[in-house]
Image 1 (cartoon, helix red, strand yellow):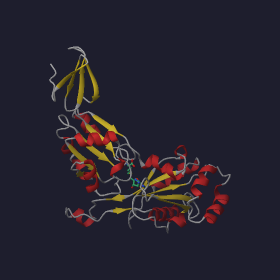
Image 2: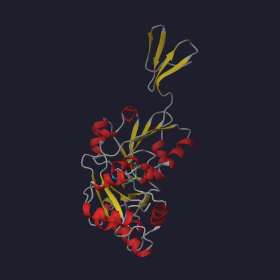
Image 3: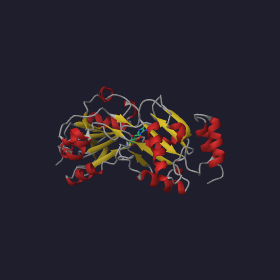
Image 4: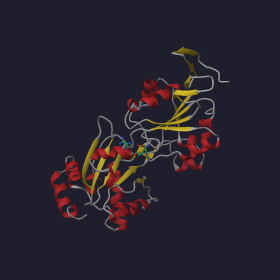
Length: 326
Ligand SMILES: C[S@@+](CC[C@H](N)C(=O)[O-])C[C@H]1O[C@@H](n2cnc3c(N)ncnc32)[C@H](O)[C@@H]1O
């Protein structure tokens, strides 16, 4: 027999039974219908959107309010406001889950998720360029149901540049180069996209709670200040790699669009050659960059041209290298 956790009431001949997660509707003794909510406890992956605390969905907020514990994944992306703003708006304390916790101590996050709800908050969309597959697989192993609440992602919001999402190829990540490590696999992906005329979205490196090599080697848990790659740094690294590889994929004259803080009131965009963008300052994080494909439609061009660093330069490069080249 099912017990009525939070009480029952009789309305129009039916009995309604309220539990913590659900409202059951008893039509007859044997016929149970779930009107609203869930019957089981869950791990909820909740997308927070891109800019601030108010970007959460209504569904996401309701779940956050009733979850037993609320974690925030804070190393693959960041919101553009402090965690204190989230706690105040959601009315819940938030546990910051760093890479170490999510990758090595996922059982800590999942503890008790079979008897009470746990919310795992992800900036953007939980499945937008961040998947947390390990956490979901571990939850499945423990027979903990998982549900996602989706939200805007940089993968879709990049359409605000006016570039058609249909015309994008593979998304690539650009990591910070060091003196001894300058991985160029991104260049091959850009080249593949370029060969079929598609745009390339580059997501830029974030370093949060990173240890220096010396501290890592000595096992000292001392962390470097956070770093977020800028559009200028990304464009410079692209030019450096072009110098090295010389296959004409991302040289000084290639057109690109740099974006900063997409979705926020102070979002910024700048279009220009990679040489121009390598000297641009778009302000606070987060930044992304799109390398234009040759198939750029004239409507896309008109949209992007509006935020060209210098429209005369943009027009010249466009007519020499892009127009009619698709
Ligand atoms: C690994 S992705 C995580 C994506 C996130 N889960 C989502 O759905 O948007 C993080 C990168 O996306 C880009 N990004 C995320 N939010 C952004 C924003 N509001 N404006 C510009 N770039 C952003 C940055 O390059 C950042 O380093």
